[in-house]
Amino acid sequence: MAARSSSQRPPQRKPAVRPRDVFDLDALEKDGEVKPFAVRLGGKVFTLSDPMDEDWQDQVLIDMHDIEGSLKPLLGDQYAEFKKIRMPMWKMKILNDRMEAHYSQYYGTRGEGNASSGS
Image 1 (cartoon, one colour):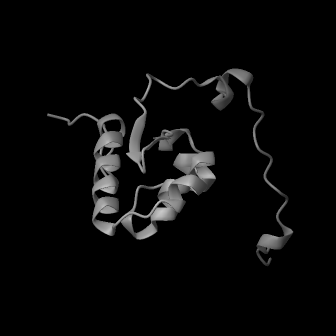
Image 2: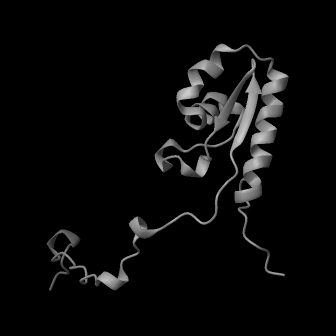
């Protein structure tokens, strides 16, 4: 007798999910508050949002290779005005470094997280 091909197998039914077995993302609250990161440029103060509050689909990373991708979502409505102000690249580099240092206090450095060590 020939073995059944995978196209002839009846579909596997998933077991019923009990309400207490559901990981409820809607009920989650953020632990602690992240101190805002603000900068002065051209005499105006710009306040950046917490990158972890941005939508996961925006994939906000503080990255010198994608300055616009880093700043635009964090500055939100302030971005257009921030972009109008001329700034030398060396200042942008320092801004990028300070942003990364600021947020790493709360979330750890990239690739490391802020988990405690096992020792």
